[in-house]
Image (cartoon, rainbow, N blue to C red; front, side, top):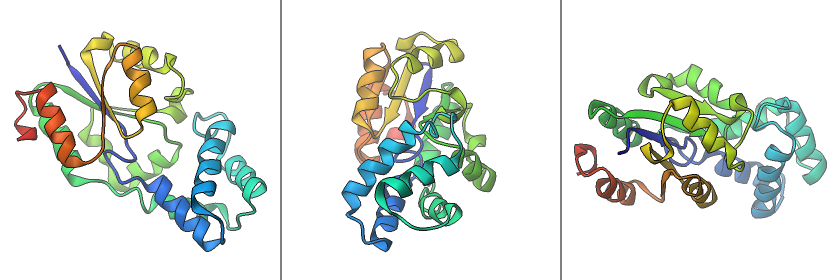
Length: 204
């Protein structure tokens, strides 16, 4: 029986600000946006910034060397953070699940940007836990992360429902025994959730 629901942050609880912000940065620098996004996404893992093993400056320096992009760290960060806008309907879904007796949390491959967003919006008050790769020291690219999180929650894998907009993360979670749902949009999410948790009036 599912007792805990974990949401991804960017792309689920909030807009996909990382991709959107990087596309704006690429356009301002005359760089192909798809290539730039691919390089930027890989470097945030390769530098260790996403898992808290390197500072933000190391990430931006690596991205400048790899792509020739210009801009101060603070300006580049703002292009991303300003686009990670919370989705009120998804916050409401988390609140309603909690009223039904389930734990609701976040499991995100985010940097310390997530702390900055929480300081500004206090979104964490809607969740029982916010589990962030920057503080966990592992990312969702590592299957063992899902075992670690289950242990942190004191839950069996089958008691957890995970919702993420990145299909690879969903597949890894499912391979570790979790219930996992690929988020595409709010409408299909509500229908999918109704099938998994049919008691929830949040999904009608």
